Length: 332
Image 1 (tube, helix red, strand yellow):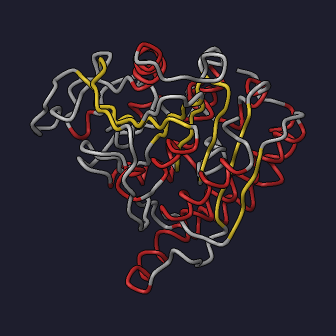
Image 2 (cartoon, rainbow, N blue to C red; image 1 turned 135 degrees about the vertical axis):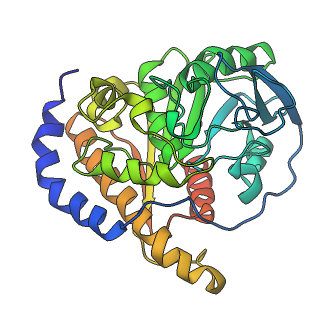
């Protein structure tokens, strides 16, 4: 895929900033945060086909539905919009971090149904080239198939309304860049995409190396990043990099946000060490790549909604971003 002119032009200017952040990071770590979900009405849980990929039983854990992906959702009669929320790198198999750590399920009380697919740690919600041989994965991830070809039809069949039959999709961290890519490639399914502290310039200098390091430390560790999109020179990296497919995002409503790495209202004293060593470097990286994406998007004639504030890589800030997006009409 040919690189957009704006990416070539501005990517070089941002290289120094990205490299500085990468150096400061040291080691990429988990999405951190605090918070607690409030009760929300209209809850339902259902299972969809896993497109042949491993489920939570793939690594020796008991699976309630082999070959299926669990979905937890909140729907209310009369709601005309639906958002699919993607998790971060340490996604669990019982509930989404969105449900565990935030109150965004309460969007259902304000006209927006909420859908959370469960599982997929380190998956980037994409179709992998091969199983991760480092940790004994038996079958390759197929999250591209699951989200677009199984989840969306299941939502339509269950009466989840959307704008002209299309849905919004948002994610945090790894789920942020994934949301942009899903929407870019399937504008027949999505009308809006949001990336919250996402890594929106995945082919920037050093990014693939840092992701390689990060994926060695997510259970069941270690993961082989070359099994995802191939080696660094594979064209699949560019095909899944939001900054490299900006021209495919025209016609979508976009929302991008990141903290500046400084401590804010959700950095509690008990978490100060982790927040400083992990949350701050991660958010600096998200901030740098999000700014790079914003510059390229603007040059290409896109006008994404943006959100920048004090904060680290933590759930409370992502919760604020979702409600900020709601107030500004992102779901309309």
